[in-house]
Image 1 (cartoon, rainbow, N blue to C red):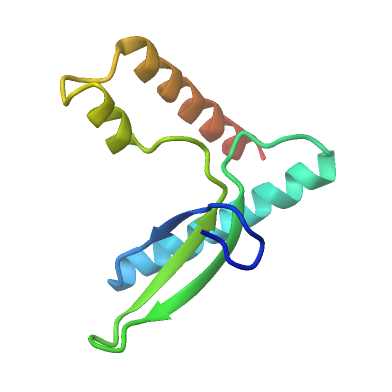
Image 2 (image 1 turned 180 degrees about the vertical axis):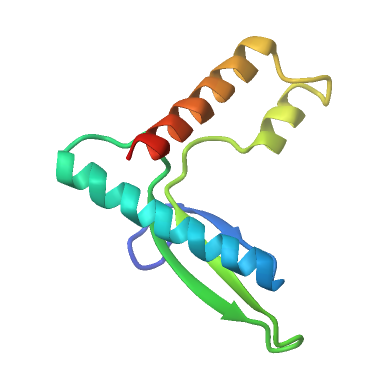
Length: 111
């Protein structure tokens, strides 16, 4: 729960290995650029909205993790898997998810 703005958010905490950290920072930059482009065009983006990002360093291990905060889009995949009793997600839902992923990728490549 976002205690500053109220409401719920989704978070992604990236592994601390250098290659994962580099990829996470690249992801942050791509998502920032996508958001700027969407605002410039006054059009919704086909990409999830990055609300914030920060780093967290573990007091125990000293490892630093890149953390990203997103708008909540809906259930995560594990919730869907559980909803269908671990027997597979219906193909029509899988097709919708795949189509949205492809539209988002297309959007990013065109911008």
